[in-house]
View 1 (cartoon, one colour):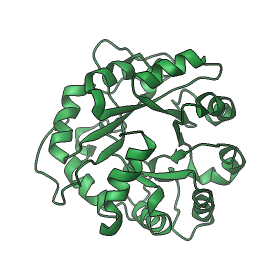
View 2 (cartoon, rainbow, N blue to C red):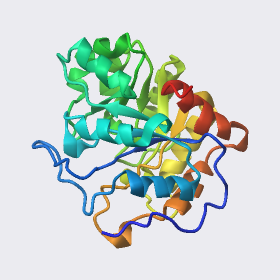
View 3 (cartoon, rainbow, N blue to C red):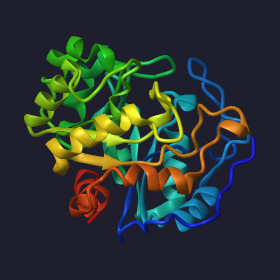
View 4 (cartoon, one colour):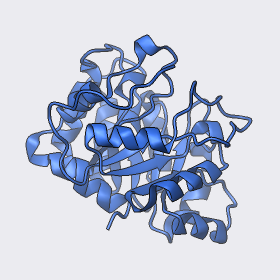
Length: 283
């Protein structure tokens, strides 16, 4: 697997201060942990991503704990140390984690907890009610990922969250879901409560219509942006770890233009800069 780390610039420049809220890193010396997926082919780390930042015009980043590392946040901590003040982290927090452990993560730049209720996830929705109180005093956000086709089954659990949370990856609707689908109405009602956010990232992972336009995901994204533009964030999903063949690997500049092009010009700065800066404590 060869991943390009630079290339032709995006046609539409990102605004100053843009935050990439969804990506993963795999520094040398940190092996995969049993229970999760293997490391991706030719696993990329901080120097490669710095090149991608310069290429796309990203200034700040949120590193999300990789499933390959499960609940061992050591690789994440290492990467946050390398990146410095331009980076924040989303870690895996297990039920029963001590306040001292969470305080240490907070001190090194972690500002979120990952809940992934899909194969390979380290901590799922069944643990949410135990994890959320542990991070509440630290004012962290929770990144939640599940099969959006079953969103109605999770409403009662999601409504117990007192702080902010983000529904990852365009809601991960693994089916033909349009903007008028009842599941999108459910998502909008959750967002109307004021603490639920929606992340534009990884459209290729759930789109049924596929490239080059990902029209089904685009339609839902536009509907959500029209409904609650102040509660939407964006991420590259770099390095696209589900892509195992070079022929399938996306052009990052083209993907950036496509997805950010769904965001109305009037709210681009809010989505790409202001909202993520507040959620992840970039002061």
